[in-house]
Amino acid sequence: MIITLLIPINTASPGTSTYHPLLGLTEKITAGFQRGRSTGAVFLDIQKAFDRVWVSGLIYKLITNNFPPALIHLINSYLVNRTFQVRVNDTLSSSHSINYGVPQGSLLGPLLFNIYINDIPTHPQTSTNIYADDTVTLATYKNHNTITIALNNHLKLLETFFDTWKIKINIDKTIAVLFTNRKTQPTPPTLYSTQLQWSQSTKYLGLTLDKKLTWKQHIIQTRDKFRRAQRAIFPLIGRNSELNLYNKLLLYTAVLRPILTYGSPVWGYAANSNIKILEVAQNSLIRNIVKANRYARNSKIYEDIKISPFKAYIQNWQSLF
Image (cartoon, rainbow, N blue to C red; front, side):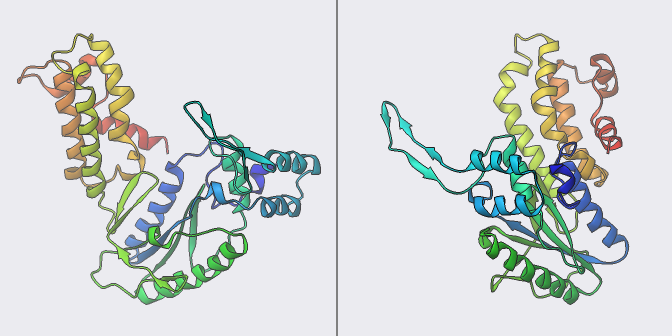
C-alpha cells in the first residue's frame, strides 16, 4: 500500500537503484541535446534530511493519505518519545529527547522520508527527479532565458513547500548546472532570494556530470580512485604476493572492478577515447596480477582467466537496463 502511494518521480522504491534516476536524468538531457535544446538543472541539497523530518507533519500526511489507523499508531509510537545518550569510555551522558527525524540506517527510515516529501509540488514547465533526499528540478528549452524563468517558477513553489513542512535547504551546497553545447549562459536561477551560480559540473548519486555530458571528468576521477584503491591492496594482488591467482582475481572483481564500472549503464556511451582511460587501467592491473610477459595479448589473458574485458563487461551491464 505504501509503495503505491509514492509519486512516479520518486524512484527510491523496491526494485530500483541509483541507476534509475541517473538514467532518467541523463536521458532527459541527451534528448534535449538531440533536439538542439539546453537543460538547466538545480540539484537541491536538503540539510540533514532524515534528521529533520517533522514527526507531527509526517503523521498528518499518513492520516490524509488514509493509512490504516493501527499502522499510524504503530509508526507514531516508533517515532515519538525517543531518547539518546552518548558513552565515552566509562562515562555516560544524561538522556536527551529526539523530537525530529526518522531513524537513519533503519528499514523504515527511507520509506517514511519518501512519504514525507511525496507531495512535493511539480510544475508544468519543468520535470523533477527524486531519489530519497536527492532532488533535482530540470527545464529543457531552446531559449536559455526560458530555462531560467521555468526554474524560478518551480523553485518558488518548492520554497513554499519546504517552509510549510519545515524542510531546510542548504543553499551553499545547492548546485545549478546548465547542460548545453552553447557558450552563452542566461542569468542563473534564484532560490530564497539568493542567485545561484552556474557550475561546470556536479556530483549526483556518485557520478560527476559535466555540462556537456562528455563524462571525461568523471572517468578521470574514477581512474584516480581506482589507482588509490589498487595501491592500498597491491601487496595482496601484485606480482610478489603469496596469494594464489584465484584469490587475487577475487579481490579484483569484488573490490576494484566495482570502482571502475559503477554507473557504466549511464556513462557507457562516452567517447572511446574516454572509455580507453579505464580500459587501460584495468588491463595494466590484470597483466600484473597474472604476471604476464610483455608479449602476451590481452585478449588471450582474459580468455584464460575467464574474466570479461572492460568494454564487454560494461556493455553487458548496459543491456540489463
